[in-house]
Image 1: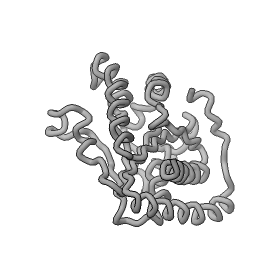
Image 2: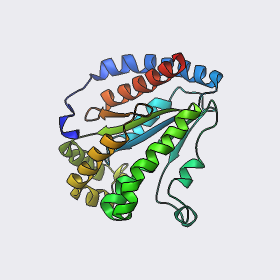
Image 3: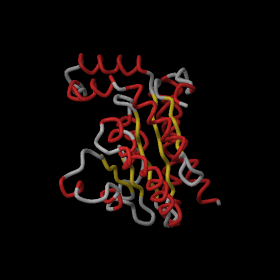
Image 4: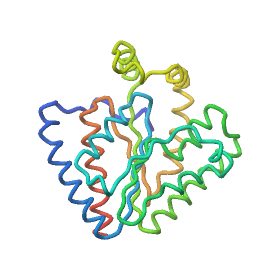
Length: 236
């Protein structure tokens, strides 16, 4: 599936700067409508290292009402979280009616990082597909609007961004030895990702793959996708 993604999609800086504020204002309008209707929204971000998740989230939220959303970065589970079922720490962060939760990394770590790195047994990550689908079904049955993003870039683009980070003293902190190790397992991650999309892209919580070689294009597509999802959910 990922091999068929057209990463040549792009947009000029001038067109991006023209469209961005317009699309941000539209999203704000639909954020307010969702709040008035009491519809919770979950937006999840996954993607390759250096795919631009942080910058994408920054543009997505730039004009939103800050009282109504929060960004939740997900890192290695704490000792307390590790002592519970892996979904426990996410249940605690589910938004209430009218609120938006934006997850920077998600429960899909169970069937991606934990699978590839061997932190979960084969039995655990295989049964996680059904657990995740049931988890998301419970959310959408409650009325939650779920939008799931994978920001996809080419291996060559990732290398270029890694090298740019290392050469920039203000961004060098963003690149770690772990990033380079993960890059060596690109093919294993691709196999896991294709299975994730096949087994967890459901009618109630579909995946959207964002062509991310062009950060401008990726940012606009994300905003458009969230706006469309809210609009369709409120009109159904």
